[in-house]
Image 1 (tube, rainbow, N blue to C red):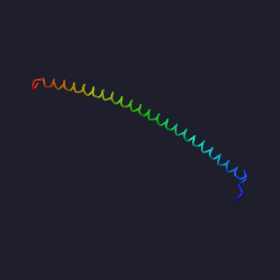
Image 2: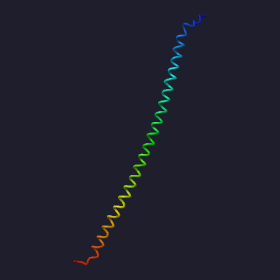
Image 3: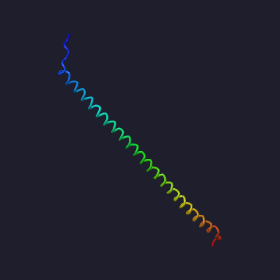
Amino acid sequence: MPALPSISEWLPSAAAIGFGTFLFGVVRADLKGMEIRIREDLKASEERQQEALRVMETRQREEMREMRAEYRASNEALNEKLDRLLERPAGG
């Protein structure tokens, strides 16, 4: 039967395994923290984009209202000119 290794033979390996496990835990925790920060940043970015989109949509609606008002005013002016032209006697 083979002799069991003495503590001095397996202790360095156990220490290396323990240290490796510790480092793995540290790296994993750091990665989890990074993941959380990235998700928070992504959420904040999406919220900023949505707000920018709302502002842009509001601005477009206002511009369209202004354009429609200008179009109506232009049409009314054109209709008045046309009415005056039609009211003139022929040849005069």
